[in-house]
Image 1 (cartoon, rainbow, N blue to C red):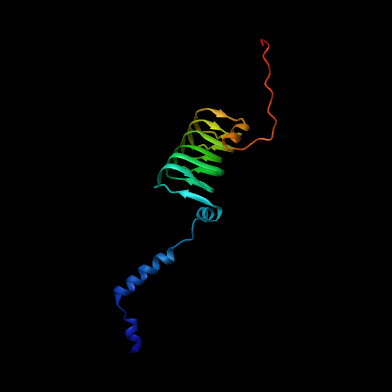
Image 2 (cartoon, rainbow, N blue to C red):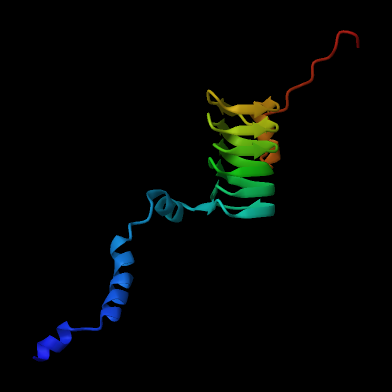
Length: 168
């Protein structure tokens, strides 16, 4: 009889206990990209986040929301995700645009505009990749020395002498 009382527990409490346990049982592990972001030093700007101003970081940034202003990631990468919108001038090691970027970009390594990406602005980078279907309006300067000036890097190369014109 002692055991009968325990088996006749309050139905409301057993329902509440099941409700608490159910989400725990159904919980799934973190998405691999989230784990990579935490371990790999990548900041993620979520889809509902809007930032106005200057963003400066010593880690990679993935943007799924909106950033307006300027972004400085001198030694890091910027990823504009498929739902990301960046209306800013960007200085970064490399940039990949899957969403929308309006502004001038200076990349010390490369910029990639994917087939789903759209960019309006001027690019200054040693390597530029425009995938089939990418939308781009602006100018491209692939002079390798130009981004070095923007990053404050001093070149060890000797200056090139100016050619004299025939008329002088």
